[in-house]
Every structure is written in C-alpha cells, then in structure tokens.
Length: 362
Image (cartoon, rainbow, N blue to C red; front, side, top):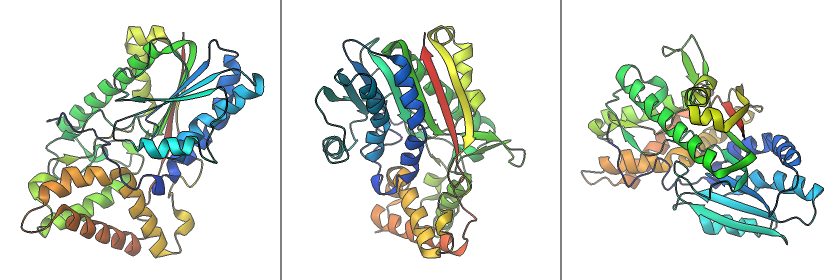
C-alpha cells in the first residue's frame, strides 16, 4: 500500500454544502444528547470549551455547537464559552466564519470563536482543555489516501483477503490514534461524542458485514468499470483505486478502548452503538423515488459531495490522456451515473447505519 504524503483522504471536497443534508440530519439527531452532556457538566471555569473535530464549512458546524450553547446559557446566562472549529487547511474557513456571525450563527457576547487547523489524527488543542468534543461524519475517513491492488472494487466493503486486512489495520490504527489525541485534550469529566457511518453484521454479504452506502459505492464501481472498458478511465489506475474510508462496527469501535491500557484508563464508555438512520434508513432520497430525474440528481450530488475530490484527484486526473481532460472524464462519469440512477430507481439506494461513540474522560 502506498500513501501519498501530501494527500488527505478528504482533500478539497466539492459541492459539500449543497449535498450535506444527511450530515446535518445526524447532527440534529444528537442535539438532545449534547444538551444533556452540557447540563451534567455544570459550571466550568474559566470557560466552557467545545471543540468540533472535522467541522466542515457549512450549517452542520453551527448545528453541532448550538445545542451546547443553548443548554449552557440556560443554566449560566453570562458564563464564558469558547468554541473551536477544527478541520484541515483545505476547509472553506471563510464560509464557515461567515456563518458563525450570520443570521443563523451563534455569535454573541461572552462567546469566543476560534479554529484549530490540522488533522484530527494529531493533537489539535492543548492538553486538558476540552469539556465537550464532537465529531460528526468525519472519523470514518482515513488519515490519508491509499492505493491497494483491488481490481473489481473501489471501496473497503467488497474487499477480501490481504487487501481487506491491510485496510482494516490502517483503520484501527487511525481510530486508536484519534482516541489517544482526544484523551490528552479532554479535561477530567469532559465528554467525547463521535458519530459517523457504521457497519452491521449481514450473513447475506460475502464479507459477513453490510456497511452503510454499499449500493452507492457499487454504482460508482459499475460506471467506472464501464468507462475503463471503453478507454475513458485507465484500467491500471482503477485497479489500484480505493476510497479512503472505513465504516466501523460497534465491536471495532470498542476494541482499542478495551485492549489499549491507556485508553481503558482514560475513558469511561457511555455508549457505543450502531443503529439505522432515523430517517429513510433504506434510501436517503426515497421521498423522491417517483421522480426519476430528481432522485438521480440528488444521488449524483450526494456522491459528488462526499467523493468528488477523491474521484477527481485519484481516478480522473491520472486517467487524463489522449486529449481527454480530467474535467471531461468527470462530466462523462456523472452523466452516466445519473443515467444509472434514473434507469434503476431504488437499486443503488443509500442505506445508512449510524455509529455513535460517547466517552467520558475519567
């Protein structure tokens, strides 16, 4: 496996805000839990500090911290609050901070806003400084882009043998690193809430597991494979292309918290569960199933939102030869993808299970 040092697995996501309804829904789903955590925390001196890891540029970054602010203000109207938005350098920081001070933002007296720029697989803020850490729809992305010998599939869910074991080991290593960093950053009594896409056991799958979005990734594979057959995409590039994601089972999420003595001592486990998404778990856009064009448009937008930059930099750009640009290849790919969704309504629907991990710093 090769790992380009200058490339993150989420670098330069495109169309994210326009197609992030699922991310916003997940944040909203946890609003009540966030309020409860803050109420239990009580008054904190010199200030309540909240860090949202992998915040992104859009409304979900505001919604992630708004319930905590509301709950704390309800108890302590004048007590200082510090909000830290943490993400990679490529995040659209200008858009984010325009939102924080805009009509739907949270800017107010005694609320201090800041940013931590870097990877959440490294330490991002000071030791013992965080009362509430949140991370939504981000920790399933691996620490860097990967290349594997994976002909026939472009994602972990359909990997087998040595390739699957290699990617699984990287995913577990990354998750362990993430937890160690948060263990250093949280204050005693502070809470870490992580929620992202998950995986459930399924005897109908050859791997024995059903990850979220399995049919969506298979739709991407079908279109990419057809384009490789026709010379639009370089077959050798496709055979080594794999999305840098891993959606954990509850068992995988729990493993380092039990096997790593430092983590076992650092955290009390309050919740580790994988549940179906509360809204449209079998097809995120089922409300539009009777409008084939709109159903397809939404799925193409969704795929561009989470995967556009990965596809462009790792598949389309390396295939850009014989007068075809990466943009030409991308346009043809999304055109065909839309056609696949229009023709096979529901067949490649996005199923989603949510993994939630809630840990309290001892």
